[in-house]
View 1 (spheres, rainbow, N blue to C red):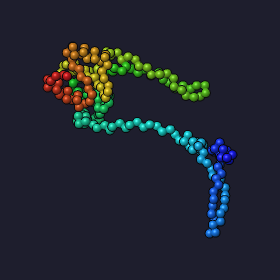
View 2 (spheres, helix red, strand yellow):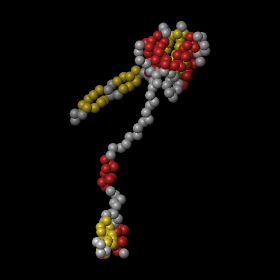
View 3 (cartoon, one colour):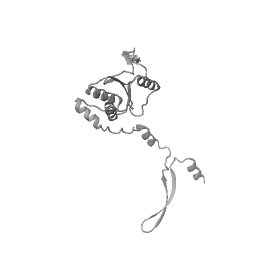
View 4 (cartoon, rainbow, N blue to C red):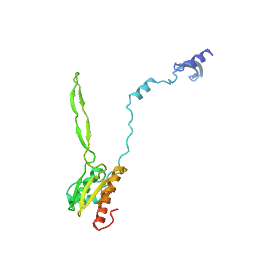
Length: 210
């Protein structure tokens, strides 16, 4: 009984187990005590190996491959430049290049402001290189809510706002749209180049701007 209590109190120590063995053809009975190591619930070697492994980073889902629309491919043929319409900058360049190819005036309006970079490298007393300063954005001077593209088509003012994905108009942009349309101008929200070309063709045929 005392031996059982000791084994239960110290599970990490070797436990002695009595086994009956039969040896030889004569069937000689031998009683032996064999030491069997009990499993260690705190295997430090295993824990160390787990701690030494670098943490697994969650992989971001891969973005679907860009399938270039036929309208963008045709624009590349006539302009001789590479284009894509899956980003705001890319779509903006597509629209401006297309309107200029058609013989109209078109320009990009800077609505994000002008960056003023005051960053510079400096060394401290310990000889370490540090970056001091920051990048500040100055107002661009454009009207609040202005569209991304300003164009003139057949003598008519056209404002084009570029929106990609889940991007939506702000209240200032909606107010700007109302002002443009009230003054007789055209306002269009472009989500992709193919839809813009269809809208442009409709306008040129005298269809509704909406």
